[in-house]
Image (tube, rainbow, N blue to C red; front, side, top):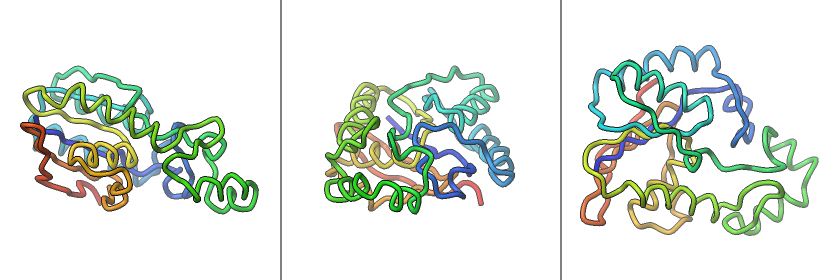
Length: 197
Protein backbone atom coordinates (compact mmCIF):
# COMPACT_ATOMS: atom_id res chain seq x y z
CA UNK A 1 0.00 0.00 0.00
CA UNK A 2 1.09 3.55 -0.65
CA UNK A 3 0.36 6.16 2.02
CA UNK A 4 0.25 9.85 1.16
CA UNK A 5 0.02 11.62 4.52
CA UNK A 6 -0.75 15.34 4.26
CA UNK A 7 -0.78 17.93 7.02
CA UNK A 8 -3.35 20.72 6.94
CA UNK A 9 -2.39 24.29 5.97
CA UNK A 10 -1.74 27.31 8.21
CA UNK A 11 -4.29 28.21 10.88
CA UNK A 12 -4.59 30.98 13.45
CA UNK A 13 -3.64 28.44 16.11
CA UNK A 14 -0.38 27.74 14.29
CA UNK A 15 0.75 31.35 14.02
CA UNK A 16 -0.26 32.05 17.63
CA UNK A 17 1.70 28.96 18.77
CA UNK A 18 -1.30 27.45 20.52
CA UNK A 19 -1.86 23.82 21.46
CA UNK A 20 -4.84 23.58 19.12
CA UNK A 21 -5.12 19.79 19.33
CA UNK A 22 -8.82 19.00 18.94
CA UNK A 23 -9.81 22.69 19.08
CA UNK A 24 -11.28 24.05 15.86
CA UNK A 25 -9.10 26.86 14.51
CA UNK A 26 -9.66 28.62 11.19
CA UNK A 27 -7.28 29.17 8.31
CA UNK A 28 -5.28 32.39 8.11
CA UNK A 29 -5.32 34.42 4.89
CA UNK A 30 -2.11 32.65 3.93
CA UNK A 31 -3.76 29.35 4.87
CA UNK A 32 -6.65 30.06 2.51
CA UNK A 33 -4.17 30.67 -0.30
CA UNK A 34 -2.30 27.49 0.63
CA UNK A 35 -5.61 25.60 0.65
CA UNK A 36 -6.26 26.45 -3.00
CA UNK A 37 -2.73 25.50 -4.08
CA UNK A 38 -2.65 22.29 -2.04
CA UNK A 39 -6.02 20.91 -3.07
CA UNK A 40 -5.31 21.63 -6.74
CA UNK A 41 -1.92 19.85 -6.55
CA UNK A 42 -3.34 16.84 -4.76
CA UNK A 43 -6.22 16.49 -7.21
CA UNK A 44 -4.15 16.99 -10.37
CA UNK A 45 -0.67 15.62 -9.62
CA UNK A 46 -1.44 12.40 -7.74
CA UNK A 47 -3.73 9.38 -8.06
CA UNK A 48 -5.58 8.05 -5.04
CA UNK A 49 -7.78 5.01 -4.53
CA UNK A 50 -9.11 6.10 -1.15
CA UNK A 51 -9.19 9.16 1.10
CA UNK A 52 -9.12 9.20 4.89
CA UNK A 53 -9.33 12.33 7.02
CA UNK A 54 -9.40 13.66 10.52
CA UNK A 55 -12.90 14.98 11.32
CA UNK A 56 -11.38 18.27 12.51
CA UNK A 57 -12.26 21.01 10.01
CA UNK A 58 -8.74 22.21 9.19
CA UNK A 59 -8.00 18.75 7.75
CA UNK A 60 -11.49 17.69 6.67
CA UNK A 61 -12.00 20.70 4.38
CA UNK A 62 -8.88 19.77 2.40
CA UNK A 63 -9.86 16.11 2.10
CA UNK A 64 -13.40 16.97 1.01
CA UNK A 65 -12.19 19.49 -1.58
CA UNK A 66 -9.87 16.89 -3.10
CA UNK A 67 -12.54 14.20 -2.90
CA UNK A 68 -15.02 16.42 -4.74
CA UNK A 69 -12.50 17.15 -7.49
CA UNK A 70 -11.62 13.49 -8.10
CA UNK A 71 -15.01 11.96 -7.19
CA UNK A 72 -13.82 9.94 -4.20
CA UNK A 73 -15.68 9.51 -0.91
CA UNK A 74 -13.89 10.85 2.17
CA UNK A 75 -13.75 8.48 5.14
CA UNK A 76 -13.75 10.51 8.37
CA UNK A 77 -11.76 8.73 11.08
CA UNK A 78 -11.80 10.05 14.68
CA UNK A 79 -8.47 8.29 15.35
CA UNK A 80 -6.82 10.67 12.85
CA UNK A 81 -7.62 13.70 15.03
CA UNK A 82 -4.72 15.55 16.61
CA UNK A 83 -3.81 14.71 20.20
CA UNK A 84 -6.25 16.03 22.80
CA UNK A 85 -4.18 18.39 24.95
CA UNK A 86 -6.88 18.58 27.65
CA UNK A 87 -6.36 21.53 29.99
CA UNK A 88 -3.60 22.79 27.67
CA UNK A 89 -6.00 23.10 24.72
CA UNK A 90 -5.96 26.44 22.89
CA UNK A 91 -3.27 27.87 25.20
CA UNK A 92 0.25 29.00 24.30
CA UNK A 93 3.48 27.62 25.81
CA UNK A 94 3.92 30.83 27.82
CA UNK A 95 0.35 30.77 29.13
CA UNK A 96 0.68 27.18 30.31
CA UNK A 97 4.08 27.70 31.91
CA UNK A 98 2.94 30.79 33.81
CA UNK A 99 -0.59 29.62 34.72
CA UNK A 100 -0.20 25.86 35.16
CA UNK A 101 3.44 25.18 35.92
CA UNK A 102 2.68 22.01 37.92
CA UNK A 103 1.04 20.09 35.07
CA UNK A 104 3.51 21.51 32.55
CA UNK A 105 6.43 20.13 34.57
CA UNK A 106 4.70 16.76 35.11
CA UNK A 107 4.17 16.46 31.35
CA UNK A 108 7.77 17.34 30.58
CA UNK A 109 9.05 14.79 33.12
CA UNK A 110 7.32 11.95 31.23
CA UNK A 111 5.76 13.29 28.03
CA UNK A 112 5.06 9.78 26.70
CA UNK A 113 3.00 8.39 29.58
CA UNK A 114 1.70 11.42 31.47
CA UNK A 115 -1.99 11.94 30.76
CA UNK A 116 -2.80 15.62 30.57
CA UNK A 117 -5.93 16.23 32.69
CA UNK A 118 -9.04 16.01 30.48
CA UNK A 119 -6.82 14.95 27.56
CA UNK A 120 -4.58 12.21 26.17
CA UNK A 121 -1.23 10.76 27.04
CA UNK A 122 1.09 10.55 24.04
CA UNK A 123 1.19 6.75 24.48
CA UNK A 124 -2.61 6.45 24.23
CA UNK A 125 -2.77 8.87 21.31
CA UNK A 126 -0.03 6.96 19.46
CA UNK A 127 -1.86 3.66 20.03
CA UNK A 128 -5.12 5.04 18.58
CA UNK A 129 -3.32 6.21 15.45
CA UNK A 130 -1.33 2.97 15.14
CA UNK A 131 -4.48 0.84 15.50
CA UNK A 132 -6.03 2.70 12.56
CA UNK A 133 -2.88 2.21 10.45
CA UNK A 134 -2.93 -1.52 11.22
CA UNK A 135 -6.51 -1.77 9.91
CA UNK A 136 -5.64 -0.41 6.47
CA UNK A 137 -1.92 -1.03 5.86
CA UNK A 138 -2.44 -4.29 3.95
CA UNK A 139 -4.94 -2.81 1.49
CA UNK A 140 -3.99 -2.35 -2.14
CA UNK A 141 -3.64 0.99 -3.90
CA UNK A 142 -2.82 4.51 -2.78
CA UNK A 143 -4.46 6.29 0.14
CA UNK A 144 -4.53 10.01 0.83
CA UNK A 145 -4.61 10.64 4.58
CA UNK A 146 -5.24 14.28 5.55
CA UNK A 147 -4.62 15.05 9.20
CA UNK A 148 -2.21 16.75 11.61
CA UNK A 149 1.48 16.99 12.41
CA UNK A 150 1.35 14.81 15.52
CA UNK A 151 -0.86 12.25 13.83
CA UNK A 152 1.52 11.95 10.89
CA UNK A 153 4.51 11.60 13.22
CA UNK A 154 2.76 8.65 14.87
CA UNK A 155 1.85 7.10 11.52
CA UNK A 156 5.40 7.41 10.21
CA UNK A 157 7.08 5.96 13.30
CA UNK A 158 4.60 3.07 13.37
CA UNK A 159 4.94 2.26 9.66
CA UNK A 160 8.74 2.32 9.97
CA UNK A 161 8.63 0.20 13.15
CA UNK A 162 10.38 2.88 15.22
CA UNK A 163 9.96 3.60 18.92
CA UNK A 164 7.59 6.40 19.85
CA UNK A 165 10.38 8.84 20.81
CA UNK A 166 11.68 8.78 17.23
CA UNK A 167 8.64 10.84 16.17
CA UNK A 168 10.66 13.99 16.89
CA UNK A 169 13.05 13.04 14.07
CA UNK A 170 10.30 13.91 11.58
CA UNK A 171 9.30 17.53 11.07
CA UNK A 172 6.02 17.70 9.16
CA UNK A 173 5.55 21.24 7.75
CA UNK A 174 2.15 22.84 7.23
CA UNK A 175 0.93 21.68 3.83
CA UNK A 176 3.64 19.01 3.87
CA UNK A 177 3.37 15.43 2.68
CA UNK A 178 5.07 12.17 3.58
CA UNK A 179 4.86 9.33 1.05
CA UNK A 180 5.47 5.82 2.39
CA UNK A 181 5.33 2.51 0.56
CA UNK A 182 4.29 -0.33 2.85
CA UNK A 183 4.66 -3.92 1.69
CA UNK A 184 5.37 -7.24 3.42
CA UNK A 185 5.36 -5.54 6.83
CA UNK A 186 8.07 -3.10 5.77
CA UNK A 187 7.71 0.66 5.30
CA UNK A 188 9.94 2.84 3.12
CA UNK A 189 9.81 6.65 2.91
CA UNK A 190 9.67 7.60 -0.77
CA UNK A 191 9.18 11.34 -0.36
CA UNK A 192 9.00 14.00 2.31
CA UNK A 193 8.01 17.30 0.74
CA UNK A 194 6.39 20.66 1.32
CA UNK A 195 3.61 21.20 -1.21
CA UNK A 196 2.91 24.86 -0.38
CA UNK A 197 4.88 27.94 0.69
